[in-house]
Amino acid sequence: MRRALAVAAALSLAVGAVAQAEPVVLRMATAAPPGTAWAREAKAFERDIEELTHGQVRMKWYLGGIAGDELQMLDRIKREQLDGVASGGMLCQRLAPTMRALRIVGLFQSRDESAYVNGRLKSTLDAEFLRSGFVNLGELGIGPDVVFSREPITTMAQLKNTKLWIWDLDDMFRQTLTAMGLAVVPRSLESAHHDYEAGQFDGFLAVPTGALAFQWSTQAHYYADLRPSFLRGCIIITSRAYDQLSIAGQRAVKQSGARAIAQLEELGRAQDEQLLSQLFVTQGLKRVPVSESFRAEFFAASQAAREQLTGKLVPEALLQRVLGLLADYRAIHRSVESER
Image (cartoon, rainbow, N blue to C red; front, side, top):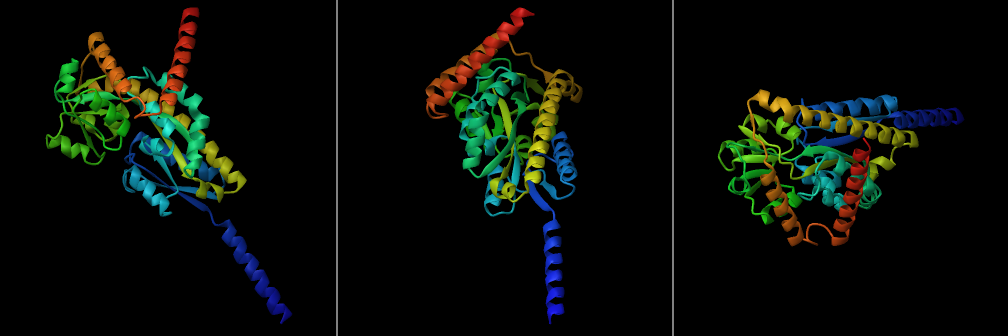
Protein backbone atom coordinates (compact mmCIF):
# COMPACT_ATOMS: atom_id res chain seq x y z
CA MET A 1 0.00 0.00 0.00
CA ARG A 2 2.79 2.40 0.89
CA ARG A 3 4.47 1.69 -2.44
CA ALA A 4 1.20 2.28 -4.31
CA LEU A 5 0.74 5.59 -2.53
CA ALA A 6 4.31 6.59 -3.35
CA VAL A 7 3.79 5.78 -7.02
CA ALA A 8 0.54 7.73 -7.05
CA ALA A 9 2.24 10.70 -5.42
CA ALA A 10 5.08 10.57 -7.94
CA LEU A 11 2.62 10.44 -10.83
CA SER A 12 0.73 13.39 -9.36
CA LEU A 13 3.90 15.43 -9.11
CA ALA A 14 4.85 14.49 -12.67
CA VAL A 15 1.45 15.54 -13.98
CA GLY A 16 1.74 18.80 -12.05
CA ALA A 17 5.18 19.45 -13.54
CA VAL A 18 3.85 18.85 -17.05
CA ALA A 19 0.90 21.14 -16.38
CA GLN A 20 3.25 23.85 -15.11
CA ALA A 21 5.37 23.46 -18.23
CA GLU A 22 2.42 24.12 -20.51
CA PRO A 23 3.01 27.47 -22.27
CA VAL A 24 0.77 30.45 -21.64
CA VAL A 25 -0.86 31.61 -24.87
CA LEU A 26 -1.75 35.30 -25.16
CA ARG A 27 -4.60 35.72 -27.65
CA MET A 28 -4.22 39.05 -29.42
CA ALA A 29 -6.39 40.79 -32.01
CA THR A 30 -6.00 43.69 -34.42
CA ALA A 31 -7.74 45.21 -37.42
CA ALA A 32 -4.46 45.19 -39.37
CA PRO A 33 -4.95 43.08 -42.53
CA PRO A 34 -2.75 40.02 -43.15
CA GLY A 35 0.18 40.65 -45.47
CA THR A 36 0.70 44.24 -44.34
CA ALA A 37 3.76 45.64 -42.62
CA TRP A 38 1.68 45.92 -39.44
CA ALA A 39 0.86 42.19 -39.59
CA ARG A 40 4.51 41.32 -40.16
CA GLU A 41 5.50 43.27 -37.06
CA ALA A 42 2.80 41.49 -35.07
CA LYS A 43 4.29 38.16 -36.13
CA ALA A 44 7.78 39.41 -35.22
CA PHE A 45 6.41 40.34 -31.78
CA GLU A 46 5.03 36.80 -31.53
CA ARG A 47 8.41 35.23 -32.36
CA ASP A 48 10.26 37.56 -30.01
CA ILE A 49 8.05 36.63 -27.05
CA GLU A 50 8.48 32.92 -27.67
CA GLU A 51 12.26 33.24 -28.01
CA LEU A 52 12.72 35.36 -24.87
CA THR A 53 10.61 32.99 -22.76
CA HIS A 54 11.96 29.78 -24.33
CA GLY A 55 8.47 28.91 -25.47
CA GLN A 56 6.81 29.41 -22.08
CA VAL A 57 4.82 32.44 -23.33
CA ARG A 58 3.38 32.46 -26.81
CA MET A 59 1.14 34.75 -28.80
CA LYS A 60 -1.62 34.00 -31.23
CA TRP A 61 -2.72 36.89 -33.44
CA TYR A 62 -6.19 37.28 -34.95
CA LEU A 63 -5.57 39.66 -37.84
CA GLY A 64 -7.75 41.60 -40.23
CA GLY A 65 -10.61 42.29 -37.84
CA ILE A 66 -11.50 38.59 -37.67
CA ALA A 67 -12.35 39.17 -34.01
CA GLY A 68 -14.63 42.10 -34.92
CA ASP A 69 -14.12 45.83 -34.64
CA GLU A 70 -12.30 47.26 -31.65
CA LEU A 71 -15.40 47.49 -29.46
CA GLN A 72 -16.27 43.90 -30.32
CA MET A 73 -12.71 42.94 -29.40
CA LEU A 74 -13.29 44.53 -26.00
CA ASP A 75 -16.46 42.50 -25.62
CA ARG A 76 -14.52 39.32 -26.44
CA ILE A 77 -11.95 40.29 -23.81
CA LYS A 78 -14.72 40.62 -21.24
CA ARG A 79 -15.89 37.13 -22.20
CA GLU A 80 -12.27 35.91 -21.81
CA GLN A 81 -11.98 34.98 -25.48
CA LEU A 82 -9.09 37.42 -26.03
CA ASP A 83 -6.22 38.68 -23.89
CA GLY A 84 -5.13 41.82 -25.71
CA VAL A 85 -5.38 44.17 -28.66
CA ALA A 86 -3.14 46.17 -30.94
CA SER A 87 -5.50 49.12 -31.31
CA GLY A 88 -5.63 51.75 -34.01
CA GLY A 89 -6.53 54.25 -31.32
CA MET A 90 -10.25 53.87 -30.81
CA LEU A 91 -10.05 51.33 -27.99
CA CYS A 92 -7.09 53.18 -26.48
CA GLN A 93 -9.19 56.33 -26.15
CA ARG A 94 -12.03 54.50 -24.45
CA LEU A 95 -9.86 52.75 -21.89
CA ALA A 96 -7.55 55.71 -21.25
CA PRO A 97 -9.66 58.85 -21.85
CA THR A 98 -6.66 61.19 -21.60
CA MET A 99 -5.55 59.76 -24.94
CA ARG A 100 -8.51 61.52 -26.55
CA ALA A 101 -6.55 64.76 -26.25
CA LEU A 102 -3.98 63.37 -28.70
CA ARG A 103 -6.71 63.14 -31.38
CA ILE A 104 -7.82 66.79 -31.22
CA VAL A 105 -8.09 68.18 -34.75
CA GLY A 106 -5.78 71.03 -35.66
CA LEU A 107 -3.65 70.82 -32.52
CA PHE A 108 -0.49 69.02 -33.60
CA GLN A 109 1.59 69.96 -36.61
CA SER A 110 3.94 66.96 -36.68
CA ARG A 111 4.47 63.42 -35.44
CA ASP A 112 7.15 64.73 -33.10
CA GLU A 113 4.76 67.16 -31.42
CA SER A 114 2.23 64.40 -30.87
CA ALA A 115 4.91 62.02 -29.57
CA TYR A 116 6.31 64.62 -27.16
CA VAL A 117 2.95 65.35 -25.56
CA ASN A 118 2.14 61.63 -25.45
CA GLY A 119 5.39 61.01 -23.61
CA ARG A 120 4.59 63.63 -20.96
CA LEU A 121 1.15 62.08 -20.45
CA LYS A 122 2.37 58.50 -20.32
CA SER A 123 2.17 57.96 -16.56
CA THR A 124 -1.43 59.19 -16.63
CA LEU A 125 -2.26 56.93 -19.55
CA ASP A 126 -0.68 53.89 -17.87
CA ALA A 127 -2.71 54.52 -14.71
CA GLU A 128 -5.94 54.89 -16.69
CA PHE A 129 -5.32 51.66 -18.60
CA LEU A 130 -4.60 49.88 -15.31
CA ARG A 131 -7.85 51.12 -13.78
CA SER A 132 -9.63 49.76 -16.86
CA GLY A 133 -8.04 46.35 -16.29
CA PHE A 134 -5.18 46.53 -18.79
CA VAL A 135 -1.40 46.70 -18.86
CA ASN A 136 -0.25 49.23 -21.44
CA LEU A 137 2.72 47.97 -23.44
CA GLY A 138 3.02 51.32 -25.19
CA GLU A 139 1.58 53.87 -27.59
CA LEU A 140 2.72 54.61 -31.12
CA GLY A 141 2.17 57.13 -33.87
CA ILE A 142 0.16 55.63 -36.74
CA GLY A 143 0.34 58.70 -38.93
CA PRO A 144 -1.18 61.98 -40.12
CA ASP A 145 -4.63 62.15 -41.67
CA VAL A 146 -4.59 62.80 -45.42
CA VAL A 147 -7.47 63.63 -47.77
CA PHE A 148 -7.98 61.02 -50.51
CA SER A 149 -10.64 61.94 -53.07
CA ARG A 150 -12.18 61.40 -56.49
CA GLU A 151 -11.75 65.05 -57.44
CA PRO A 152 -8.98 67.48 -56.46
CA ILE A 153 -9.70 69.47 -53.30
CA THR A 154 -7.90 72.79 -53.11
CA THR A 155 -10.14 75.02 -50.96
CA MET A 156 -12.06 74.84 -47.71
CA ALA A 157 -15.31 75.30 -49.63
CA GLN A 158 -14.54 72.23 -51.76
CA LEU A 159 -13.62 70.25 -48.66
CA LYS A 160 -16.96 71.07 -47.04
CA ASN A 161 -18.81 69.97 -50.16
CA THR A 162 -17.06 66.60 -50.33
CA LYS A 163 -18.44 63.61 -48.46
CA LEU A 164 -15.49 62.00 -46.73
CA TRP A 165 -15.26 58.63 -45.01
CA ILE A 166 -13.99 58.51 -41.44
CA TRP A 167 -13.67 55.51 -39.13
CA ASP A 168 -17.05 55.01 -37.48
CA LEU A 169 -15.47 54.51 -34.04
CA ASP A 170 -13.55 57.80 -34.21
CA ASP A 171 -15.85 59.98 -32.09
CA MET A 172 -13.30 62.74 -31.51
CA PHE A 173 -12.72 63.17 -35.23
CA ARG A 174 -16.42 63.07 -36.06
CA GLN A 175 -17.49 65.64 -33.49
CA THR A 176 -14.83 68.19 -34.43
CA LEU A 177 -15.12 67.82 -38.20
CA THR A 178 -18.91 68.06 -38.00
CA ALA A 179 -18.61 71.24 -35.92
CA MET A 180 -16.32 72.60 -38.66
CA GLY A 181 -19.05 72.04 -41.25
CA LEU A 182 -17.49 69.05 -43.02
CA ALA A 183 -19.70 66.34 -44.48
CA VAL A 184 -18.17 63.25 -42.89
CA VAL A 185 -19.61 59.77 -43.38
CA PRO A 186 -18.71 57.39 -40.52
CA ARG A 187 -18.35 53.80 -41.74
CA SER A 188 -16.53 50.70 -40.56
CA LEU A 189 -13.09 49.76 -41.87
CA GLU A 190 -14.57 46.68 -43.50
CA SER A 191 -17.34 48.45 -45.42
CA ALA A 192 -15.35 51.50 -46.56
CA HIS A 193 -14.12 49.98 -49.83
CA HIS A 194 -17.58 48.80 -50.92
CA ASP A 195 -19.40 51.96 -49.79
CA TYR A 196 -16.98 54.15 -51.74
CA GLU A 197 -17.57 52.10 -54.87
CA ALA A 198 -21.32 52.44 -54.26
CA GLY A 199 -20.97 56.24 -54.26
CA GLN A 200 -21.95 56.76 -50.64
CA PHE A 201 -19.03 59.15 -50.19
CA ASP A 202 -16.38 60.82 -52.35
CA GLY A 203 -13.15 60.23 -50.48
CA PHE A 204 -11.37 59.19 -47.30
CA LEU A 205 -9.79 60.98 -44.38
CA ALA A 206 -7.22 58.38 -43.47
CA VAL A 207 -3.60 57.87 -42.48
CA PRO A 208 -1.30 56.92 -45.40
CA THR A 209 -0.44 53.45 -44.07
CA GLY A 210 -4.14 52.77 -43.49
CA ALA A 211 -5.04 53.84 -47.02
CA LEU A 212 -2.38 51.48 -48.32
CA ALA A 213 -3.27 48.55 -46.03
CA PHE A 214 -6.99 48.68 -46.81
CA GLN A 215 -6.39 49.54 -50.49
CA TRP A 216 -8.33 52.81 -50.40
CA SER A 217 -5.43 54.49 -52.17
CA THR A 218 -6.17 52.31 -55.22
CA GLN A 219 -9.71 53.68 -55.36
CA ALA A 220 -9.04 57.40 -54.97
CA HIS A 221 -7.53 59.60 -57.71
CA TYR A 222 -6.10 62.49 -55.68
CA TYR A 223 -4.57 63.11 -52.28
CA ALA A 224 -3.94 66.29 -50.31
CA ASP A 225 -1.47 66.21 -47.42
CA LEU A 226 -3.54 68.43 -45.12
CA ARG A 227 -2.68 66.65 -41.83
CA PRO A 228 -5.61 67.79 -39.69
CA SER A 229 -4.72 65.35 -36.93
CA PHE A 230 -2.30 62.58 -35.98
CA LEU A 231 -3.62 59.14 -35.11
CA ARG A 232 -2.02 57.24 -32.22
CA GLY A 233 -2.54 53.62 -31.29
CA CYS A 234 -1.56 51.31 -28.44
CA ILE A 235 -0.80 47.69 -27.60
CA ILE A 236 -2.47 46.43 -24.44
CA ILE A 237 -3.06 43.14 -22.63
CA THR A 238 -5.44 42.43 -19.79
CA SER A 239 -4.15 42.58 -16.24
CA ARG A 240 -5.76 39.15 -15.86
CA ALA A 241 -3.49 37.64 -18.51
CA TYR A 242 -0.42 39.61 -17.44
CA ASP A 243 -0.73 38.64 -13.78
CA GLN A 244 -0.72 34.93 -14.57
CA LEU A 245 2.76 35.21 -16.10
CA SER A 246 5.94 34.61 -14.16
CA ILE A 247 8.12 37.62 -13.35
CA ALA A 248 10.39 36.60 -16.22
CA GLY A 249 7.39 36.27 -18.51
CA GLN A 250 6.11 39.73 -17.59
CA ARG A 251 9.55 41.20 -18.19
CA ALA A 252 9.73 39.51 -21.59
CA VAL A 253 6.27 40.77 -22.60
CA LYS A 254 7.18 44.35 -21.72
CA GLN A 255 10.57 44.10 -23.42
CA SER A 256 9.10 42.60 -26.58
CA GLY A 257 6.26 45.11 -26.51
CA ALA A 258 8.66 48.05 -26.30
CA ARG A 259 10.66 46.62 -29.20
CA ALA A 260 7.51 46.16 -31.30
CA ILE A 261 6.36 49.71 -30.54
CA ALA A 262 9.75 51.14 -31.58
CA GLN A 263 9.74 49.10 -34.78
CA LEU A 264 6.21 50.14 -35.69
CA GLU A 265 7.00 53.80 -34.98
CA GLU A 266 10.10 53.72 -37.17
CA LEU A 267 8.26 51.82 -39.89
CA GLY A 268 5.36 54.28 -39.83
CA ARG A 269 7.60 57.31 -40.17
CA ALA A 270 9.47 55.76 -43.08
CA GLN A 271 6.29 54.63 -44.86
CA ASP A 272 4.63 58.03 -44.44
CA GLU A 273 7.60 59.69 -46.13
CA GLN A 274 7.75 57.14 -48.95
CA LEU A 275 4.02 57.07 -49.62
CA LEU A 276 3.42 60.80 -49.54
CA SER A 277 6.53 61.76 -51.48
CA GLN A 278 6.55 59.08 -54.17
CA LEU A 279 4.71 55.77 -53.81
CA PHE A 280 1.15 57.11 -54.03
CA VAL A 281 2.12 58.93 -57.22
CA THR A 282 3.66 55.72 -58.54
CA GLN A 283 0.32 54.02 -57.84
CA GLY A 284 -1.37 56.57 -60.07
CA LEU A 285 -2.64 59.12 -57.56
CA LYS A 286 -2.13 62.82 -58.19
CA ARG A 287 -0.82 64.96 -55.37
CA VAL A 288 -2.81 68.13 -54.75
CA PRO A 289 -0.75 70.96 -53.23
CA VAL A 290 -2.27 72.46 -50.07
CA SER A 291 -2.00 76.24 -50.28
CA GLU A 292 -1.17 78.34 -47.26
CA SER A 293 -4.58 80.00 -47.45
CA PHE A 294 -6.38 76.64 -47.49
CA ARG A 295 -4.32 75.36 -44.58
CA ALA A 296 -4.82 78.57 -42.59
CA GLU A 297 -8.59 78.53 -43.15
CA PHE A 298 -8.80 74.88 -42.11
CA PHE A 299 -6.84 75.32 -38.90
CA ALA A 300 -8.74 78.49 -38.00
CA ALA A 301 -11.98 76.53 -38.39
CA SER A 302 -10.59 73.68 -36.27
CA GLN A 303 -9.69 76.12 -33.49
CA ALA A 304 -13.17 77.64 -33.58
CA ALA A 305 -14.71 74.16 -33.38
CA ARG A 306 -12.41 73.25 -30.49
CA GLU A 307 -13.48 76.34 -28.57
CA GLN A 308 -17.12 75.59 -29.36
CA LEU A 309 -16.71 72.06 -27.99
CA THR A 310 -14.67 73.06 -24.93
CA GLY A 311 -15.38 70.62 -22.13
CA LYS A 312 -17.22 68.20 -24.43
CA LEU A 313 -14.30 66.59 -26.23
CA VAL A 314 -11.90 66.53 -23.29
CA PRO A 315 -11.93 68.26 -19.88
CA GLU A 316 -10.82 71.88 -20.01
CA ALA A 317 -8.00 71.19 -17.55
CA LEU A 318 -6.62 68.45 -19.80
CA LEU A 319 -6.79 70.66 -22.87
CA GLN A 320 -4.88 73.41 -21.07
CA ARG A 321 -2.27 70.90 -19.95
CA VAL A 322 -1.81 69.66 -23.51
CA LEU A 323 -1.57 73.22 -24.86
CA GLY A 324 1.08 73.97 -22.24
CA LEU A 325 3.10 70.89 -23.17
CA LEU A 326 2.81 71.77 -26.83
CA ALA A 327 4.03 75.29 -26.15
CA ASP A 328 7.01 73.83 -24.23
CA TYR A 329 7.92 71.57 -27.13
CA ARG A 330 7.70 74.37 -29.69
CA ALA A 331 9.85 76.63 -27.53
CA ILE A 332 12.49 73.89 -27.21
CA HIS A 333 12.32 73.20 -30.94
CA ARG A 334 12.76 76.90 -31.80
CA SER A 335 15.72 77.13 -29.43
CA VAL A 336 17.40 74.13 -31.01
CA GLU A 337 16.77 75.43 -34.51
CA SER A 338 18.19 78.87 -33.66
CA GLU A 339 21.41 77.28 -32.40
CA ARG A 340 22.03 75.41 -35.66
